[in-house]
Image (cartoon, helix red, strand yellow):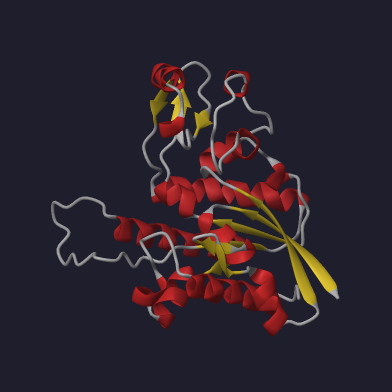
Length: 259
């Protein structure tokens, strides 16, 4: 039996395809090991997963949460301070890294007015009135990243990872299919999520060309097997969708010689 370790820095797309996907407290897809059992018997994977707020925030992290945040004991759900301010991805040496562009596509962050650090106030609707007032007073909203900004940050992230590890790096793109989106003319519409995803996906191709990282082409996998049946909304897949993406990860790891 051979065991590989995967460091997965990302959100629901990585967790639900590689670790497990639960629906109504029932395990619908049991992660990459379920795929390995059928595709590569004798190989198992240990998934080390951390949530990911955004590439610019990750690059600015030094592994320590700011004292002002730590002192408030905020309830942050899936985005605890230990994950938000972790720099472990730049120090680890697993058998493979798996990243995703999802956070850069979708997440707006808050910036400290005093110290300029970035922060994701996850689950802030459940906070006390005092904590919410503190957030409004001490932080300002930052705009979503542009695709070119994100690409530059990802290039820096990849370079930092490759300084300490020669493990392969895989990066998920996103399915651009948006249920209910039937636009045919974009004049005066502004940016919509489907076109935003396509721009980020195209930049990821350039990143792969420059660095040699592998793209987990979620867009192709989902389109090839029927996006309407595999997506519950623009960001979430069905259990079958996560299974197909997980099997694609196994195919890539096999193709590059890791398994």
